[in-house]
Amino acid sequence: MAREFTSVGVVGLGTMGAGIVEVFARNGIDVVAVEVSDAALDRGRAHLTGSTDRAVARGKLAEADRDALLARVDFQVGLAALHSVDLVVEAVPERLDLKRRIFAELDRVCKPEAVLATNTSSLSVTEVSVATGRPQQVVGIHFFNPAPVMRLVEVVRTVVTAADVVADVEALCARLGKVGVTIGDRAGFIANALLFGYLNHAVGMFESRYASREDIDAAMKLGGGLPMGPLALLDLIGLDTACEILDTMYRRGGRDRRHAPAPLVRQMVTAGLLGRKSGRGFYTYEKPGSAKVVPDGSTPQERPAAGDGARRVARVGVVGSGATAAGLVEVFAGAGYEVVRVAPGGDLDGLAEVDLVVEAVAEDLDVKKELFASLDGVCKPGVVLATTTSSLPVIDIAMATGRPADVIGLHFSGPVPARPLVEIVRTVRTGAEATETARAVCATLDRTAVVCGDRAGFVVDALLFPYLNDAVKMLEAGYATIDDIDHAMKLGCGYPTGPFELLDAVGLDVALASQRALYRELRDPGLAPAPLLEHLVTAGYLGRRAGRGFREHPGR
Image (cartoon, rainbow, N blue to C red):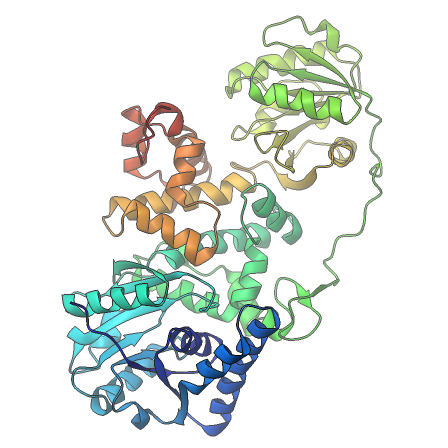
């Protein structure tokens, strides 16, 4: 039977530490809250009272319950105050030397049976534990920010952590109303190992000027269904914190290039551009600590709805017979365009007088090139020819025509009628008029358009599928279960679906094809498709539509 922790200590009362104090005190546990000085203690107390006062103002906490919560907290300076607690959770800055010093002192101060826990998000729990004479009683308890709100806790066991200690902490998580996932001591654990590779990739995309900060963030919110864009999220986390986590994961995780902090991250940290807390990061904020974004020199200028330099579009041709083509017809007709639809292999002469052609035929380069060569011979001069490809090089399609300046990618996120995002893909030969025409058309469709270059995956898939591939590699390594990984990303990062839920919905074959395209183009070993993904596709386990993918889907 698991022991019951009746009193806990929390070391470090920054935003995270104060949040952890609140979690324990909300659940009837006495807390000794410790800082290094009176001034730091006052700041920690202010964090806690501010959070609880906001909860009262929002009707989330009764005044009497707030007062009872605060009464359970004993604020003290110095680790000596922790001599009688059952559990200590350390939440100081992510510096191994600092944590090791604290744990060595805790080992001396705390009673022999006390459990010592670190809230580290990236450092080795094992390396922290060996600073004590009781490594079997040291465990990672990684809360997510804000701790009172986020339901996930990663319980990190080392190779010597006692089984009863892990069980006791798992029971504590349940008592706190948290979902605990228990994992081994690996760089980044689950959530950060998957999240920060994606965030770092987004920085590289912005750094190379592939797409603007606004377009990258909009693409992942609207096309990826995420609660926040990657660059805005980095500003919230703090660029210095992100840099430390990435650097630690790179050193501890096999020196995967995807975890090597992008040069721009280091430069911004050096320049003091740390995100919201400094008032400026990828975006500029009203003041340090504010969440309100204000215009700066990189803020895009407002565009007229019609789009400067756009050609007039009244009639639209759609080529294709599947769900995407049907969705395109519905969307264009609903916006007032006259639509001409042609089935693949059908007579294209009906497209002779249209102003825009959008193809949605099979995702086969030869098929698309043949179609565009035929369109080149049928369509009048000045017609914009658009492909909805999600993975093929648009330039290869464009060069099948004699008018590559008029060829562009229009990748509608599916299902087309429901999703508000369109990726406008420019090739090195796409003309400005074609781009502005595409922008104007997207505006009339009430779609958010993001503009990017002609690279594998464009914005959304280039960021999304490597994250999914990393999740498969994590599963393949036996590090965590499908359910734990999905729980970690939904509860720890606020994602609407876990990676394996999403893979089964999208289709494992679709994910594999996209990942192969990314790997072929970039040749980054970290982007090589996970062997398990390849094996499942070979076996015909393609996801929901096949009745089985990473999970079974009876009746599908």
